[in-house]
Image (cartoon, rainbow, N blue to C red; front, side, top):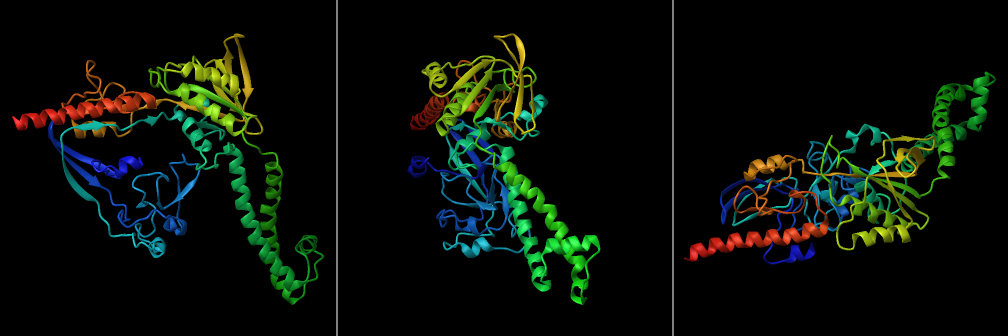
Length: 453
């Protein structure tokens, strides 16, 4: 991406949206809305001091909701341009409240709360649609209980768990355990605050809180004038303190047994090859699961992964060898099965119910973590893009192309590549992107030749 950002013949319009397209192949006029970042790209150095100072936490969608960011943020560290943006839906200033801390902290004077959206008109010869894809929502399959069971996650969530810059710093901690630790942290703050209040009462009256409370409850307290004034408040504070302190100790004891997930199940074809949702194969999921299982084993050699699938479609060059290597070297097992249901046991471990096709019997097996290989679906805004560009979609919602010219859409001069075309893996997407660039160049050259003649 750095090479693209520095290339003299490439102009990046990040955080922008195509509003309208007019004209014909070789002579299009594109109307583009550049959204207000409320940060001057030319001044911002990407140092992050503003984000550190910002007091407003927001759920981080880049980390699949397993972490928080600030109202002023960078989408991810390697983004181009290397600048920040302010979320207008959560920024205190932009929602009519008082703040402006980020503006005070920015030494580059890059924060501009008065910045407005800008409309640009571009003259272009050809257009390439490379919108990527959206993953299938596994909550639509109720038997897998995604969102109901903490330790059932998607492959994209697991990808972030494996990343050193992710919410778990590369450690495969179970979401249920992380939730307990977050509760412990919250309770510790409450207990610390209530203990300070109890300490003040103890200092003023020279008696320990537990001794006071026992006497107070037994009715054997002989309070002086000062204590009589404070006794009800003290008892109420002690009640609140105990209400948090006891579950805190219980949770701390429970957390002592927490460790990283070592027994992991991958369930393939979640939403794909399924007549209820997408009847097609998503193409990359099998290899993606194998890759994640191998990386999980690299993180911890005690990790064992089981991949449940109707079959493993390792069709690319070297893919079958990669699959075998995962089984031989990375403690990965392959089980031919369609998982019927996921439940849980007492320690929040997901329990898979499936048919073992070799034994021809229904089995139950508990895992530390379950990873759902979700289907590759069309982007949610595909219909809007289709209407804007005047091109057709296929019956699944991907951009329709000419069978004889698989990069050509229904409108001359507009081409498509990658998962905007159909589900495909990275090598195929890269190859198709090169082909789409060549087709776009042909259109521009053809138009220039006509002008010259």
